[in-house]
Each structure stands twice: as structure tokens, then as C-alpha cells.
Length: 112
Length: 113
Image (cartoon, rainbow over all chains, first blue to last red; front, side, top):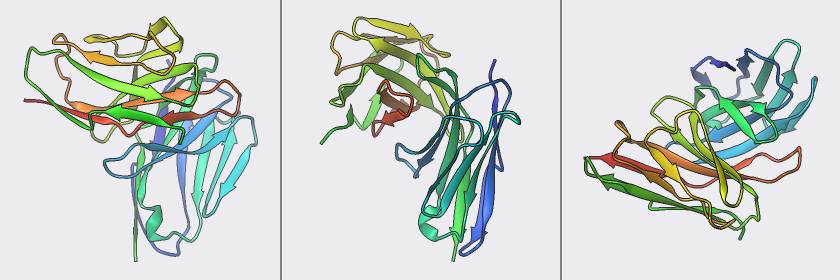
């Protein structure tokens, strides 16, 4: 059974600082997703990482995938208040069916 | 605009009642999914469908049922057999290319009174 662990689960940081969210998973997978969820809202897709060493960047967020270490990171650069949200990683375990296991999420609060 | 719609946004159910949550997409996606989200947790898969007239159980299918009579529609029924149905329910769809992620609807918040 695929297990996905995110840490930290809660993160409070000041504007302008950098931080990294970690997503570890227990079995082999070659596809990993990052999503953002605002309070009371649905999930918004941020990144799809398809291969070992994949790196994608959008604005102040950068995601990477190391399939050998079974680890993905979401790096936040110079945080701003608008980045406050819950971030989920999801690891594919049946790519034909599009099935993934989600982590419990990291709730990020960016303070002025 | 292309997207996924869910209705209703909020739903209240009395114990012993069945309720049906609607999910419609106009993205021309073959695959559709239903998830349940409890406070402070990630999403858990209830049912999924890869093609019309076919669907498969996910990890927590007990107490739920679905149908897939049309490509655009994938309704979820929460039956009285589901003992703890209060949760946020999310519907998603997905295209077929390797780059495809899942696109989520706005969700339905179900509360049992």
C-alpha cells in the first residue's frame, strides 16, 4: 500500500522568507502532483512531475522530484501573503486509471 | 468556459436518507473521480470511472453508489449505509495524456443532521 507523508503539516512563515515542504512516499512511482487548496475551496493543480530529476517552477513556487529517494519538494521563495493555503502532494499508483494517494496537506500561513 | 460543476454547494441530510450529489464536466474527459475530504486530511477516493457505463470502487466505496450513463455526468449517491457521511465531496475529471492532471469541481459540503 502506497503511503504518502508530507511535512511539516503546519507552517507559519514571514513574508520574504524561503521554505521547503517535503513529500515522501513509500513505493515506486513515476508521477507526482502538487495541488493548492484555499480554505473552503476546491483543489487547483500546480505541478505535474513525470520523471526523476523533474523540476518545474511557477512564480515563487518550485517543485522537484527524486524518484530514487521517493521524495518531492515544494520550495517557496520570498513568500508573500497570497501564498497562504494548504498544499497537497499526490503520488500516482495506477497511472492508467489516474489513481493517486494524497498526502494530508501542509497548511501554510504567511504573515506580514 | 470548460470546467466541472458540482451541485448543490451545501447539502443537509437527515439520518436514514439517501442523497445524490451532481457532477458535470464539459472538458470531454473520459475519466471521472469522486473523493471525500475530512477536516485536516487529504483526499480519499470513493469511486472512479474511466469510460461511460463502467466504474470501479476506490478505497472507501462502502455506503456510496455511482452511475456513468453519460460522458459528461458522474453522480454520487450517499446512502443510509454510510455511517459517517459528513464531509466535503470533490469530483474530478482527467484527460488521457501523460501531462494530464485532475481537474476538480468546486465541491459539495454534506452535513448530516
